[in-house]
Amino acid sequence: MQSWPITIDDVRGAQKMLAGVARVTTMEGSRYLSGLVGAPVRLKCENLQRTGSFKLRGAYVRIAGLSPVQRAGGVVAASAGNHAQGVALAASLLGVRSTVFMPVAAPLPKVAATRDYGAEVRLHGANVDEALQAAQRYAETTGAVFIHPFDHWDVITGQATVGLEILEQCPEVRTILVGVGGGGLLAGIAAAVKPLRPDVKVIGVQAAGAAAYPPSLAAGRPMSLEHVATMADGIMVGRPGDIPFEVINTLADGIRTVSEDSLSRALLLSLERLKLVVEPAGASPVAALLEQPDSFEGPVVAVLSGGNIDPQLMQRVLRHGLAVAGRYLSLRVRLTDRPGSLADLLGVLTQVDANVLDVAHVRIDPRLGLTEVEVDLHLETKGPEHCALVVSELRDAGYVVSH
Image (tube, rainbow, N blue to C red; front, side, top):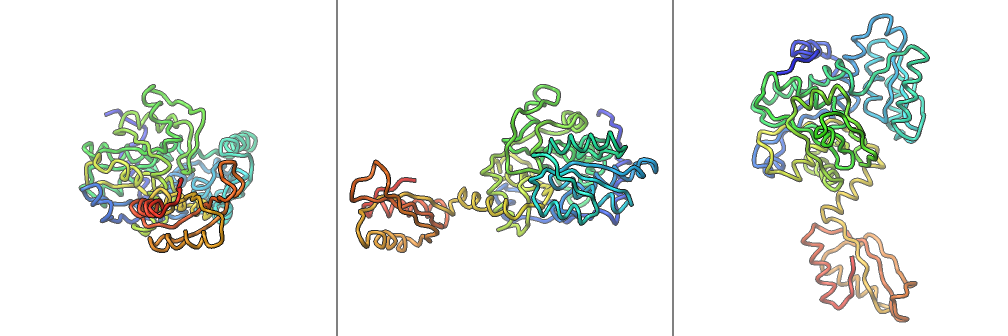
């Protein structure tokens, strides 16, 4: 096996360093997912880590490794959330001044949390890339050490402690699923697990709209995506890190991609069935299990990498997840424009136990006759079978229905 600048002894040393700093997060079972997969499924709950994600581990190990002179100059980072909070807390615990650049549109709860952990927050740019450029310029002009979110061996060593904990908590594991953005967490887990348990499959999961690793692995080098778009902002990275790519290309057992619909369903499942608040990036391994439950050898450990989700995003994602799960139904129904016609329609919906959330009349449409009106309905339903029943009953009652 290829040698790396870090060894298992280094990872164990990082584990000791993090004692009392990072939590040994719990591992929970899931009866629902285990039944779906046909094998035990365990959840490594890094969403319950201090600062709400695994990022504290790597940030602390990286900053702790700085010389006294470097520490005196402070550290700087750029992030929209998780890395920002990890760096802020790690620096505070080590007595190091930290500056974090965040996009102007970064969620307010994440900005407030980063400040509360002790960092000076500077809002700059429309996205993380612009904030990153500003942070690098700041490092060059002030001498502060730039703390990269994933492309450094010390950061990967810190994240690798998650892999050791998985082996300790679930020694019978056969497959580990890990969400992937730049690749620091997957690289760390693979670097820790494979030397000790080469039989364990370590598989990354990326959002289909930000899947830079499949083309990069095919090309044998990191490749940049022209466009990235996903609700999973924690893994919305357009290019693999050089160092993580080297490890993943050698040690990992493949990358799976998941759709936005599956991410929504996974987030909803995490709340409803697992009783866990998980951000979309953290739910990506669950999304992979939902999409391809028969393709993973158990026992499976799914790493829930973070739980920092903006409440407004959660509201939108949950609505989308409910729609994907058949719990919302949007219809347009044509009626005769006369008194009582809407009441008759609502009577049919009452009989099939569909809850009306919203009603809107559409009268200005060249397709409508002079005595016709269309009604846009948003309904709360009980699942795909109930949706089909609602549509069937409306059509049987003589209504023209489109959706």
